[in-house]
Length: 339
Image (cartoon, rainbow, N blue to C red):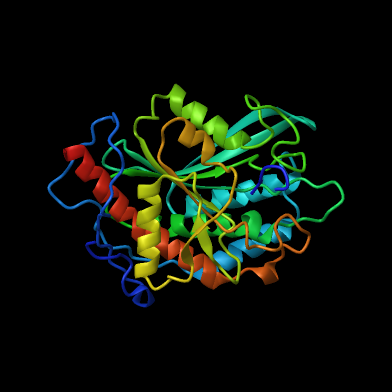
């Protein structure tokens, strides 16, 4: 994660321990603001209440963290990131997701760099898109061995495990889910405002590329929500509210997390993020939420952002909450379309 200078119906995923959580859709009090959208077809059954046959496993997520760290520092256009990319892709394919890799070149303060976004798709009954995302490269440092256990290995690991759970559902989902792993979120300079310009910033290279592709493919109108994960595995997990995030989407996730018993994790203090990969989506009118612990993570962009600082429990809390929130988001979007 980079930062500017100096920087109710019922809940879901009940009985995770039995590995047969059942998703119950619920709708928050305040829905998303109305705006023109492509028509979403509906079916007689309630939206996405099919059982998930595999629960989120925090230890599996922790294994993904270890694997990334074993590769070493993983800045853009490095052999270590290429290995990470191959690992992510192979995992997604093993879960039955449709995997694509978009390679592209960008001009950075350090010259031309090759980057690549990874997308794992679970096709749904409609073209409506819900994106769940994370960046997967580590920040470049010339003189620091930075392995990024929390930033971004835990969010990548959590996203992979979410993909495994979603891929285990035999019934076709009502909407199309895409798990997107962005390259180049981090600035090559120390801070986001140290290099580049407003029109050509030194950050969010991958997410800006993906938004441009959505626009070119006429998919922006169908892209109804982005859930961004970034730095979600600290042992002392506490997620404040990013003020840039779309409030109705944030409310669903915060309320769901608290209903699952994580009131001390999903808190109401403001998380002063300053910017992240959800920004390009928000600028295009896509509702987006950032789940991130930045202000109270003392090892951000430090050499001791190492595996001893993160926990499988924290990743499971985030994974369970996101998975439990998805049917509520789908239900709300379907209701909005009917109206």
